[in-house]
Length: 388
Image: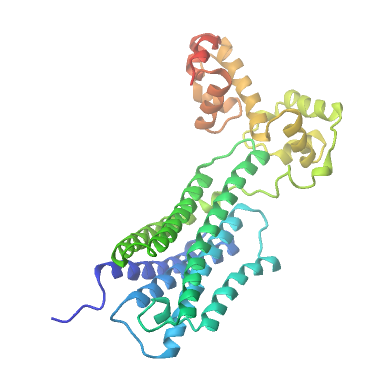
């Protein structure tokens, strides 16, 4: 009986490669995202698929070439794709969460990582045999260099993935500076997926470090698990890109960090204009009110409006507007003229467009649910004492 070239665990690498090829095609045909984001995501899929192929060939004992060119090409392919998937994932996250994003000259600095690893491979002649630490393939210098290279290649994706997670966290905070109504479902799933890659690559780093002290068989078993998780995450990211990515709200630079000198000491008049404009014109009833729309009504630049809301009202725009909406809802719940309206009608009439946001804010401000508030005639003090 002939010895099989591929084992069952190699199959997941083959599937990852095949799926990544299909995902690139589907991405170009079906994507509703910005062109640059679609290109970056395609680059990520290409790198993940190519790295799966390189890993399969590198660690397969039955696929072996004696050609020095083939060995060095395999090593270069592996290091290039490991760096590439890290950079592409990070830039993709940035691209879909920032308005008017485009690749700039400074983004080329990410290529320094590629220059570093390619330089190490060529300078140390770290071909595929040396990356595998095959017997008699190393001298003392090349063995140490190969070890440093693997450390770098395992750490780099973790650093970029957690940097992407931080970008998403900042993005979620910035949304509350710009919008009075928003859905966090898209950012939430993007955060989970990116965190999934971060933890998966962290696991790969831990397995690599464990490989220094445990048997090869144990480290190999842990590494195989990493391949399966990668396959699942790649498919999940593609589904996300089709269903949610194009719906993400975009932000500019945070109003609170850009041009901090816009307002040093806000005038009482400016503070009063913000409050009276919101109250007299009842702009909080506009479901999709943005800070720029509100600032135009106030007659002050939106950065100044944001700064005043942050400093004088000790909150962000999102919380500021929804506080007024809760007060409006409370009035309607207690007004006999609106007794015929149900909770859903009232939350829509008070400016909310999401049941989850309404219930979250109402419970936070009153200590009870809207239904309990109406039932108790607007006396939430006693229930509030035992709330959470």
